[in-house]
Length: 349
Image (tube, rainbow, N blue to C red):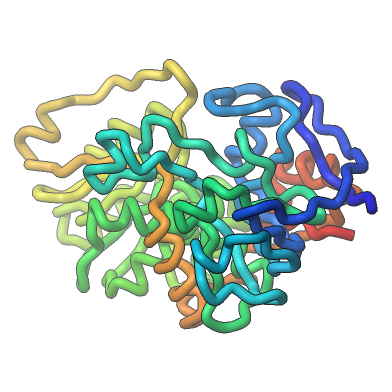
């Protein structure tokens, strides 16, 4: 039996093809994919702007939601209790468990990591194999209650946001500035509000994206209005937390300037490879700023993200705004490039 899949053969070569529908081998689990949302990283893989860890010929897609349809021999001994029809996704970082990063609770930065959608076939296909090594590591994660597939897809980006949030820790009463109103910026805004932030400003040039931020309970502002509004709300002190969600090097200095004394600045966005920024280090020194990054997520972060989604704390409808069938995946990529809506889901036909 055949199934439809998208494969990345080379930069700018995303091909639809027929593949043999998989069966679960020993230790494997097969998911029927119900949705896969796209992110900016997917487009960077498509253009060749990001190549690290990519195996050409791979099925892209790392934000996927599925349902268990086949369980291989021996899986019950590895992960007891799995049942056919169970809703599931995967923590996309398959780590080795042996390197120094893994041994120091940094499995998401594993020296030998493999990623779904990069080296391991991802969600832009009708059926997905969770390989034995991923099942062995506990990367297959099920839900506790039914979620819409589009909601479950967001477990991956939310898990990455939660990993970063652990570093900068939004506290009740904080004023937070989010630079960028893409899906990640809007998710960070929702998480900051859920943590009790007094006010969350989301900066973006797009009036439509600012309106989304407003509907989520944040304050959407144009970039040139951000600093005056933050200063006005804090009696000139600045933001307690600044989260950079656009990979624009010039924002590095802007974030430091915007932060209050003792503030926390997080560079969440990935920047172009080899890029550099001019920053005034005295801002970090004299303001005693905490500057952190955030990349990928652990298995436990994915579980936390699913629990958040199950609680209803995340407004999914404002994030996943458009969908395309898998047979029109090329159109979905172009729509993402043209910034149609906020986030796009690809649904198997």
